[in-house]
Amino acid sequence: MEETKKSLNFIEHIIEEDLEEGYSNDALRFRFPPEPNGYLHLGHASSICLNFGLGETYNAPVNLRFDDTNPAKEEKEYVDAIKRDVEWMGFKWDKECYASDYFQELYDWAVMLIKSGKAYVDSQSSEAMAEQKGTPTEPGVDGPYRNRPVEENLDLFERMKNGEFEEGKHVLRAKIDMASPNMLMRDPILYRVLHKAHHRTNTDWCIYPMYDWTHGQSDYLEQVSHSLCTLEFLPHRELYDWCLDQLVSNNKLRPKQREFARRNLSHTVVSKRKLLKLVEEGVVSGWDDPRMPTISGLRRRGYTPEAIRNFADTIGIAKRENIVDVSLLEFHVREHLNKISPRVMAVLNPLKLVITNYPEGQEEWLTAENNPEDESAGFREVPFSRELYIEQEDFREEANRKFFRLKLGGEVRLKNGYIIKAESCTKDAEGNIIEVQCTYDPKSKSGSGTEESLRKVKGTLHWVSTRHAFEAEVRLYDRLFNDENPDGHKDKDFMEFVNQNSLNKITGFLEPSLKDAIVGDRFQFQRLGYFNVDKDTTAEKLVFNRTVTLRDTWAKIQQKN
Image (cartoon, rainbow, N blue to C red; front, side, top):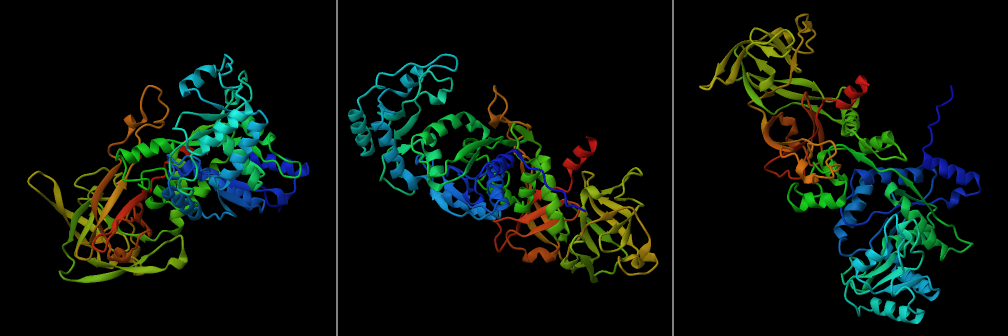
C-alpha cells in the first residue's frame, strides 16, 4: 500500500515551482528574523516551525538573524531568551547573524543611493513629513528638501553618522515616488539619528537603519532564498524589491519575500508591546509568567516543545488571518503529556476520611502503575493507612444515582487500594463536613486476585495518606483574559479584559514519591490535571503549576461539529 503523501502548503508550492523552474536545491536558504525587543510568543513559534521546518524538509540551512536596528528597545536579555527558546523548540540554526553585522555595508549602500540621486536628507519635522505624504486617496507632495544637491546630502549624512545632530533633526529618505498608490513607496525613511548605546556596537553608530532598508539587504548578504513574513508585510514587498533593485548583481541569488497569515490565539494577545505592558504594570510576574503566551511562559507552565510543534503543524500555513481556539493548543498539550507523564496522587481540596475498621497504627504499601501509556515506566509503592485525605467534592451526604463518587451508604474504590463504604460524617458548627467515617472491605484490595477483589463499583477516588502526605504550593492557572478576542475591540483597551482570577495559589497534599521532584518534572495528578514543578521551588517548599486540566474542550467541540 502506498504511503499517503502529505499535501503541500502554499509556501511549499512556491518553493517547488522555483525548483522546477531551475532553482538549485543547494541555493535554498531560510531565516528566522526576530527583533530582540521582547520574548518570543506563540506567533513566533509558528514562524520558527515554518522556517526551520522548511530547512528540514529541503535539507537547507536556516539562519537565526536578529533584527537589531533599534537600540532604544533592544536588549541582550532578549537575544539570549530568543536563542534559548529556539533551541528548546528543538531547532538548530546554521548561522547566528545580526543586522548590526551589516551596519557598514548598509551605510555604504545608502551613500551609493545618495550619489545616484535616489536618496536625500530631509530636515522637516515628523509632523510636516506626515502631512506632505498625503493620504491613501490623495497623492503626497514633494518636500522642500527633496532636491537637495548630492554633495550637501552626502555632507549631512556623514555628519549624522558622526553624531553632530540631535535626534529628529534629520533623516535620510529614499527618493522614489510621492504619488505612489502604495504609501510605503512615498519616499520612505531609511535612516534616523539615535544617540543610544547598542547592545553589540555600543556607541559606534549614531544613526540606525530602518527595517525596510535592512531586511532585504540582510537577506541578500546572507543569500537567503525565501524571506517569509507575516501578512502585514505584504505592502512592504514592493519596497523590499525596490531596495534590492539598487544593488543586486547578476551573479548572486536574489531573495524573494513571500507572506503568510498570522494565526491569533483566542483569549490572549501576541503583541510584544502589549505583553510588555502586562509585565511593566505587574499584571504578570514577568515574560516567563506561566499565564503568558510567550514560549518561555509556556515552557515554565509545563508545555512541551513537541506539543507546540504539533499545534503549529495542525493549524498550518494560510493566506488569511483567523483566531485559533486555545482549546486546540491545550488538546495537543494533553495528547503529549498523556504519553510521557507519570501518574501520581495529590489532593488539592482535602476532606479527612477515617477507615474505622482499619487497625490504628497500621500501614501498608500499595503497588501503583506509573503510566498505563508507557509499559517501561514501571510501578511504584504508595503508603496506605487508617486516615486519608480525599477531595471535598468527592463526597456528598445525599446524591442522585448519577453521582458515582462517595455518598452515605455508598461504595467506591480507592485508587490502587480497597473498596470503602461511607457510614457517617462529622460537621463543624457551621454545618460543613469535616470528616467522613468509612469501613473497608479487606478482601477487595486491587490486584489481589481474589474473587472479592474482582467486585465492581462504579466510582474510583484518588487519595493520600494523611500520615505520609506532604504539603506543596500548587498554582492553578486560568486564562489571562476573559474575552475571546481582547485585542479586537476598537472602543476598549485590552487591559479591561484581564481576568483578575487567573491565578489561584493553594496548598496541596501530595504522595511522598513526589518529594524528590525537581524543577521541570511533569506529572499527571490523577483526576485533576497535568502539573509540573516550577522554578520557584526551594529546598523548603515544592511549587507546582497546573499545566492543563484533564477536560478536553477541543475534543468536545469537534464532536459537536
